[in-house]
Structure formats: structure tokens, C-alpha cells
Length: 234
Image (cartoon, rainbow, N blue to C red; front, side, top):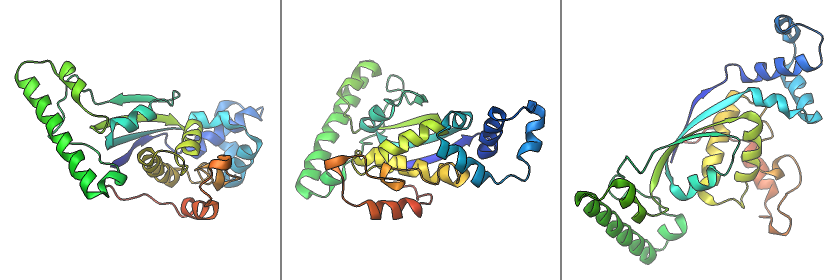
């Protein structure tokens, strides 16, 4: 899996601060720059977040490039509707030979891992056989598995990212999208440390939201996200 922060709003936290200042000031737009000079963004944005004035977070956007993930995971990702997506098309792009994701639970079982790989090899072989026989890629792709690797570019604003991280960084989330979301958070937090200081699953900043389904490790989870830094690609 590889997650890259391709682009983001320049000075995202300053942009958010300017937006928030406008809401509570009689200044002209041109005067807002002076209003935020010398202001502690950490204190000011912390106050805004505590007030729940999160609409101003929508003025900062982040664009990620994601590759080496399965179609099973991107099917979950695109359920987050307040975002923009561009995904590699299986109608026009043939998958590379046997390029797929194996869940750790299967890869850790030698017998099941072999059966998984053997089956995937047969599926990809049939795909190539069909396309060579003149079957359109858009039809041959019907045989490809959820495990098939894909690439996607996703853009979310900071407000939606906080919601996304709250759901998908949780231990209850499916393992692959959880890893992807955690990598995205590490990159976003590097560029906007105040906004994402308490980002992550609910237990990072408060009680667990999963009730009886809790993982039972709030302390470990809080420590993990407190010390989060960009992860190496794999």
C-alpha cells in the first residue's frame, strides 16, 4: 500500500483561521490578514473546534493518491459521499498479472494462502485468455476478484476527513481501510497539526463509541495516535 499527499490548501490552518475570524469580525476580507497576525493559531483554532464551529474546516482541502489497495477497500471508501474520487478504470486498464491483496488472516495460514494464490492465478489467467480472444476488457473484468489492486485519487475537506478518521481509524474498521486511513491521517497531521491534533477514532479524544463492541484498548490507541507519524510505504 502506498498513500501520498498530492496536494492541499496552502497554509490550511491559516485559511481556516481567516474564515473563522470573518464570522466574528466586522472587518473587511482585506483586513482579515491583519486580524490573524500574531494570533496563536493553536489557541484560536482550539477554541473554534471546542465550540463545534467546524463548518470553517471545509475551506481546507487535501488530495491523496492511493495505490496498492484492493477493490474491496475502495468500495468502502467511496461510501464517504462528501469527497471527490478518480479511480483507475477496469474498462480500459488491464490488471497486471496476479496483482491482488491478500488479507493477513489468509496469508498467515500456509494452506489457505496457497489455495488463495492458486485460485487468483486461475482467475487472472482466464481474464487474459478472454481478452486475447477478443472479449472486451469491460466484460472480462467481471471475473476479477474484490482482491484486485486498484489506484484512486481522493479529495476531502478537513471537516470530512475528521469524520472519516473517526470511523475508519477505529479498530472496529476493516483492517485495510483502517491502515489506509491511518496513513492519510499521519500525512494530514504533518501539514495541519492543530486541526488534526485529536483526530482518529472516538477514543482518542473521548470515550469509545463502540459500546459493547469496544476493542478494550483505549490507552494503547490514544498513545498510538498521539505519536503518529507518516508511515513507510509497503
